[in-house]
Length: 178
Picture (cartoon, rainbow, N blue to C red):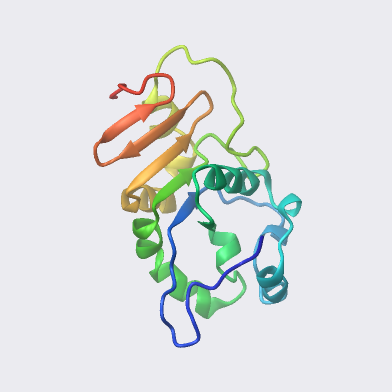
């Protein structure tokens, strides 16, 4: 596993199909960020076990869905390079709108919880409580990511929801419409 540049030396975009990740940024250890000090190493090799749980789970989900590429902001953007940060923030519209889908760590309060943690058995299909009122959904960047994404897989505390332009479905009731 390693970082791949999406541009060649002439600046041409080499994007292959990919999944974007919408997650909660927090006061977590900077070891999960790409910096000018570790970018060369990350382009050669990154340790799966050295990533936070949410990122590990996103990789597992992407692979199971047949994708080889994943966009995770703190890994794909050099965090201590102000020029790159400025340029990539301008590209967020393209990053999320061009992704094949977005994986949302909707129920994760932090990066150590992961996507696949569940808190119980579904009593009902409650998209409003599990997605709309989730802590992740209250963040400004996430509003943009969700609006721009063509398809989003929300990993809720009780179940998983699929959201796209045609509607919303959930894992326990594919016909569900909020």
